[in-house]
Image 1 (cartoon, rainbow, N blue to C red):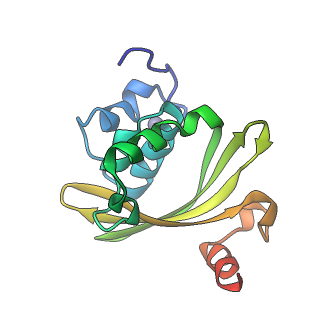
Image 2: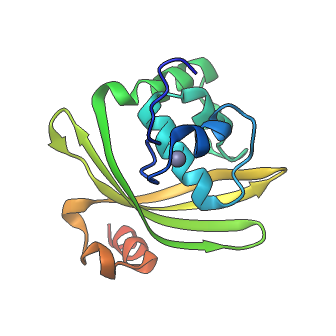
Amino acid sequence: MAGSPRDCPCFSGQRYVACCAPFHRGEREAETPVLLMRSRYAAFALGLGEYLVRTLSRDHADLDLPRVALIRELSQARERQRFMDLRILHEETGEREGQVMFFARIFERGVDGSFVEVSQFLREGPGWRYASGVLVPKVDLPAPLEALTPADIFGLRTRE
Ligand SMILES: [Zn+2]
């Protein structure tokens, strides 16, 4: 890939070629929900809208949108946002379902737009796909990152 970064934008500390690039190129399927999650974060940072659409669960609501426009919109997130760090806080992997809670450090036009999300993943065919996510902005978090549980994030949602 022309213009590929040296270090993986998923903040694994690995080289991009040895980390998320094989997923992005379609050479490999992510073997766990965490790997898929990381590769999607990196895809946002790199503007790989097609990969982001390809890794949506078949029932994801975004798939009802016109595909070309959706790919374009996802590819352009990097023009507004800077993807500055990713920390996996919690993960659970079952046979067909997985859950990942992560902290994404993101700045949008100079404003801190960081958040914690609990993402749900489903195994569909050969790989994991992104089904849904519940997101809480950093300013609204009820506890420090180290102390957060997925229940805290879901609890905030039900109080809305
Ligand atoms: Zn990576």
